[in-house]
Image 1 (cartoon, rainbow, N blue to C red):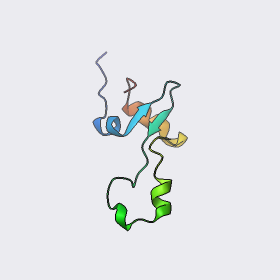
Image 2: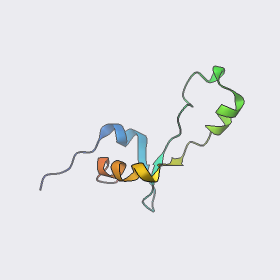
Image 3: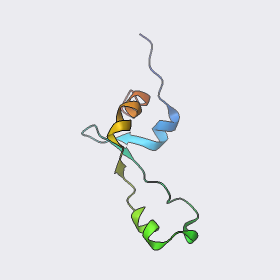
Length: 67
């Protein structure tokens, strides 16, 4: 059986927690922060969020070795 390839784009965006949940980083916190409201910036402060349950199976398929 050949080795499975890891999707490199998914590797940069997602990681696993110790319990097996898929962790992701919230969007809209990289640039153009001067144009955003204080509320937008505060809500985006949480850098670690969890991936949606509906997407979790697809993400786990892209990251077969728990990257």
